[in-house]
Length: 428
Image 1 (cartoon, one colour):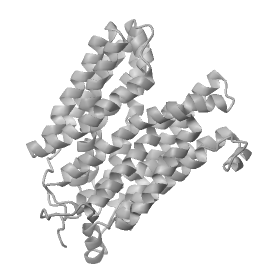
Image 2: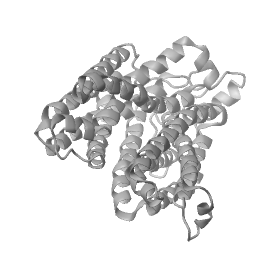
Image 3: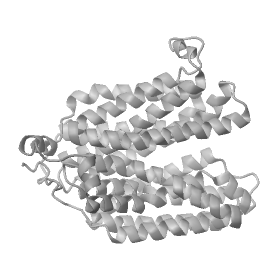
Image 4: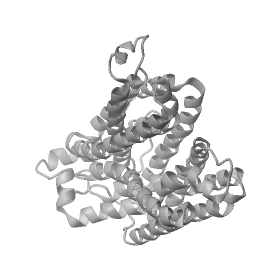
């Protein structure tokens, strides 16, 4: 095979490499925008659809779970398609799916306008189907984008390229909070859908990965995707180590931020901090954390060392929330920014996943990793709930967090550092 990322050629501003980075970054921006938007507008949208306060709570959780199930299924499906059909087809296929789902979501329960045909269906059922489909679509973009960019960028620059994708993408969370509050839920969904479809204009400038194309020509009989991954304990173990190393990130989001009213109330805060405001503060820190963690991995010439530094910082950020939080909502929010900053090692985890596996399973792993980390929030919140019932929410945070960080630290110690690795290889 050829090795298109072995050297560091000069590239122009509108070169295929830079266009691919731009499309992957903007696609991830819209991806995160939609992922966070539902949490921002779900109460307003369900209220407008005529649900009572109790129904809003139960239906909101149901819709969120459907979206997560869609992401879990999509993480496998898109990953396998990326290794079977190419990175480019998955990148744009996933963008099309979640963009159309967003557009139609704006018409749920509508009685007038060009989306009024959506009003003929039961609004909750339509909402549920579209959140599931959006979840499937959202699961594919990041993995496909990172895989494509990693394979067409030089080995010494790919860390920076992926860092740009992560930093731009996280801004989508902040945008979701601002847009969702400013224009209402229907227009917010329309904007997200239109942004995604607009990216299709850039498709003409994006090229397929040379490593993938070379594998297709030289290794047509090689096993690809999900089957070789599941058939090898070594490969599966390598994937699970990455998921466990990223688990603390979603502990911070699902428990300390997502359950802030319950935790803060147990601390004695009245009124407790707003989850929406905490999400904005968390992701404001994460924007700079993504940049800093990616650049640190380049400076140290090590992915695992950068992850270790930021994982330790995340643990410190969690402790700061618990120590400073009782002083007031302002202190809780300030510590949340610190926690969000250090949780920015998310993008280095995804980069490590892409660099750690061969071309025949790379898209599958890079797509599955972030979605499995997101789904890890389920056992984490279950553990928190069990401890909180007997020991209280504050103790639940401490013990659940301790378990997450111990598991993540042990997992990291077994991950081989892939920095600067030649990606031109396949897994047996």
